[in-house]
Image (cartoon, rainbow, N blue to C red; front, side):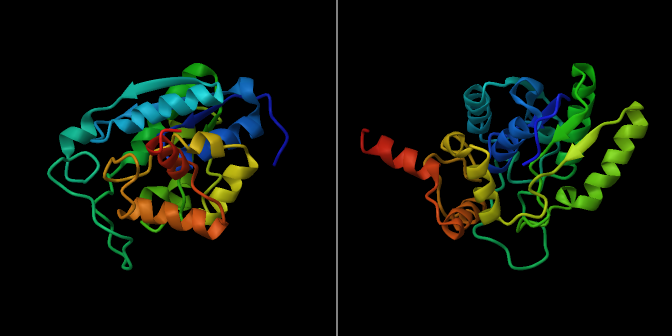
Length: 234
């Protein structure tokens, strides 16, 4: 892990496993006083994500701003914003994009985040996208992020830098990184389930991927442990 920098960083925090890990990575990389979080209310069906993001930001001791973007809900056509579309079950084994793909979401998020970071005097943007993720979302690929970084620098005449700590990590490696940067406690409050369930449903593609990552890393999932303890009245 690199030594902390005095430069400011903005983390895109969804309330999920990957963005939570990246938040704690950024705290180690840039220092606690130099990190803020931005969360997007984009009309996602499962509002629990927003609650989780607030809780995690509070646990991490970072300032969080929630920005509203309702255009994705108006566009619809995907399982994350359209109540009429159910998320696909299990992890796909072909090259087709799952119906949880929200076209342009990360491009829009990072553009808004870069604009917000500009006003906050933050040069560094941190996002939890990963090219190794099962879904193959095209806006999570390194070449997409590199091209966007160039566009943002030109369009805002800035030196903005996009950081993607998880880009080539497996889910198990992401779990290990979370342990290394002290994110496990916060992961107990994260939300991943595509069906919006707490405790997580365990059978949607996102739940399966998360469970596989913790199993391969040889660690229990803090979220599952918390839910089990609460169910038992502890």
